[in-house]
Image (cartoon, rainbow, N blue to C red; front, side, top):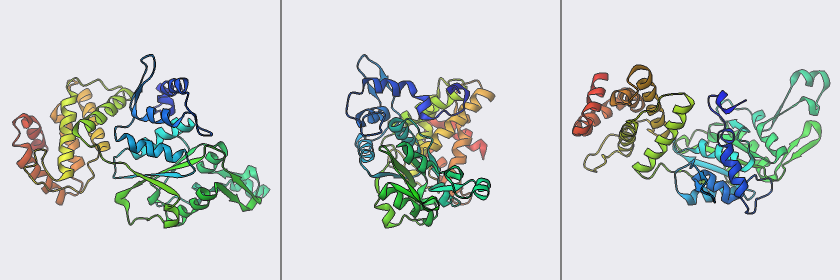
Amino acid sequence: MSVTDVLRPHAEQEFAAELALLAEHDDRPRPPGWKLSPWAVTAYLLGAELPGGAVVTPKYVGPRRLVEVAVATLATDRALLLLGVPGTAKTWVSEHLAAAISGDSTLLVQGTAGTSEEAVRYGWNYARLLAEGPSAAALVESPLLRAMRRGAVARVEELTRMPGDVQDALITLLSEKALPVPELNTEVQARPGFTVIATANDRDRGVNELSSALRRRFNTVVLPLPETVEDEVAIVARRVEQLGTALELPAAPAGLAEIRRVVTVFRELRSGVSADGRTTLKVPSGTLSTAEAISVVTGGLALAAHFGDGVLRPSDVAAGIVGAVVQDPSADAVAWQEYLETVVRARPEWNDFYRACRDLA
C-alpha cells in the first residue's frame, strides 16, 4: 500500500527515503540487529546535513544529550522508559526510535486499565487449542514476543495505565531476555537487537505505580516541554504542515502568526504567569501541551479552508483554544475569563482574538 493511500503512515513509511539515505552514508559501527548506527539514529531524530548537501529533517526538537542518552541506553541491554507530561512527544520519539533502529515501529502494546497479560506475553487461538491441544500453531504471539523472535524494538505505551500484575509480566522478559512457554515446555529467547521502549505520563503517578523491580529494568529519560517559544512554534508549525498535507488542507499564508498566538496562550496559562512576567495567572486543569496546540491549529486550518477564505485567522483558532483550556467548566472558566480580561484585552495587537473569544461566550 502506498504512503499516499493511508491517513497516517508509520514513521518507517513516511521517512523511508531519509532512512535509506542515512543508511547509505552510515559507516559507523552498528549494534547487533540495528539498521543504523547510534550516530545515524540520533541524526535521524534531530536532523542533519549529509555529505553532498542532502538534508535529514528533524523529528524532535529538544536537548541533544537526552536523545543521545536514550539511544545509548537502547544500544545496551537496558530497556528505555520515556517519562514526561502529556504532549512532550513521548510516543512520537518512541515511534521514530523504533523505525530507525529496527525498521518497524508497529510492534506496539497499548497500555490501558483493561490490558491483559496476554498482550505482553502470549495468548491462544482457542478453537485450535480445543481441537488440537497446546501447540505452536495455536499460540498467538504478543507484539513483544514477535519482537523477541525478530530482534526488533517493541513499544509499550502508557505503561503506568496497565494493571500491576500485567506490568510485572515484563520483569522476566526484560531481565532474562527470554519468555517461558510452560504449556509447550519451551521458551523463546530474544535475538540480538531486541529491546523495549515504554512511555509513561508523570501525571499518572498513583494510578498503577511501577514496582521497584520493574523500574530497575528501565533507564528513564524525562522529556521536557519545549524550552522556548521559538522551539514550540517550530514544532507546531512543522507538525501542522505535515498533518495539513496528509489531510489535503490548503496552506495558510498567515498561519505562523496564529501558531505563535496559540503557543503563547498555552505557555502563559500552563506556567501561571504572562510572558512579560508582570501578571500572575490561574493555572487551568488541562495540560495545554504542544500536542494540543497542534490539534487547535489543525482544526483552525480546517475551519479556514472549508468555512473561510483559506487564511488562518483569530476566529479560526479561538474555539479550539477555549475548548482546550476550559476542561472543568467551573474552575477553568474563571481562569480563562481572568486571562482574557487581564492579559489578552491589554494587548492591542490581539484585539481580533479578544473579540473572537468574547463572541464565543
